[in-house]
Amino acid sequence: MTRMGQRWLAAAWLVLVMAAVAAAQPSLSGFVALDVQGFAHQPVLPGQDAHQVLASFLLQPEFSYDWRNGTDRLTVAPMARLDFSDDRRRHVDLREFNWLHAAPTWDLLVGVGKVFWGVTEARHLVDVINQTDRVEALDGEDKLGQPMLRLAFAPDWGTLTFFALPYFRQRTFPGVRGRLRAEVVVDTDNAQFESSMKEWHPDVAARWTHALGDWDVAVGYFRGTSREPRLTLDIGDDGKPRRLIPVYDQIDQASLELQWTVEAWLWKLEAITRWGHGEPFSAVVAGFEYSFFSLFDTALDLGVVAEYLYDGRSATAPGTPFENDMFVGGRLVFNDVGSTSVLAGAIVDDQTGAALVTIEASRRLGDRWTIELEAMAFFVPSTALLYSVRRDDYVQLRLSRFF
Image (cartoon, rainbow, N blue to C red; front, side, top):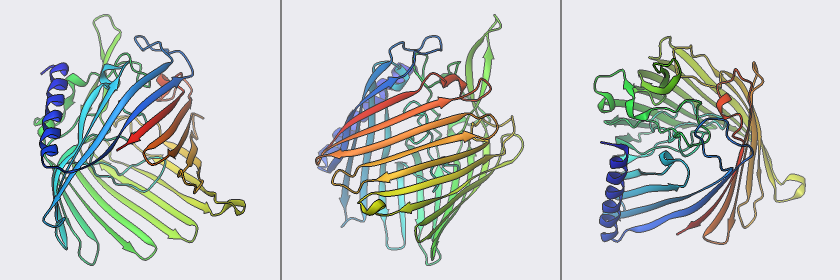
């Protein structure tokens, strides 16, 4: 099926789902938003949209319906983005579409869901269940909905969760006209898989979590198709690069999460060991957040964050810019009626000097409106993995209306 056909099918499916759920008279929440991005420089890659101000609309409703005194719930959370520049960013997805049954000591979820693993700020190493929606943002925070069966038990010694993941979602990537992309466009229509079953390889995962006094502990294991593709360069007959082909390997990944809360300190660690991308490797993100409450006898709270990022992968694994880096940042919370907050920080590579500076701020405007600011600036040498986005410094404003 062509990409256009897939979009029409997804749109028709979304309309049918919304109509079916609306007939059941569920509760409705969500938001609609206008995103305006302003880029500091003209693009440097061929084919990119030459406009330095780009706009798009985002719709994310959520329908839920409870019955049997709340022990059963149907959740439908689609999203749709209308982008006026990059056609790959103009897409529809079901973030959630599932039935949840909650019993006193166990629960079962069947359908499309979202799962988050992790505790650190700069990078979520262990977050392996959902695929990254790369066209939405560079930071990897946005995720595609994942078909799953999730069964969780809650005995006295912690929570044990099992996942069966019957279908794999490919990572999305910007198109030719998109900003914040690689020098050569990723060909998502011709992805390659180590498994002969391709997207239908049955993946599995398990996770144990427990609170031990001031400690929060989680141990996870994943076996299946890697959410990180290797990108192989396809050379044309003229000797010039034509496209990047994503290759999805079969991997095993063991993970550990630790969080220790002591007075104003919050110590965090995420660590993984992964097999399947050639040589086995380990990676870790570790650091702390220290909070200054009632700063200068005001309502302000300031959290100082510092984390070290290490990744020991070899050249046969998917590339990463976070091999040996430091993240330093601050979180300022105003504790006002508008819930104003600002998070700013920088990730600096110890070897190359490359740096990624980020700012995120948000404020509520009344009961139903919010305004958010996001900014990124890139300081990268020609040898850095992120060199292709060296001229993509941007500021984004989002105005959201909740319902």
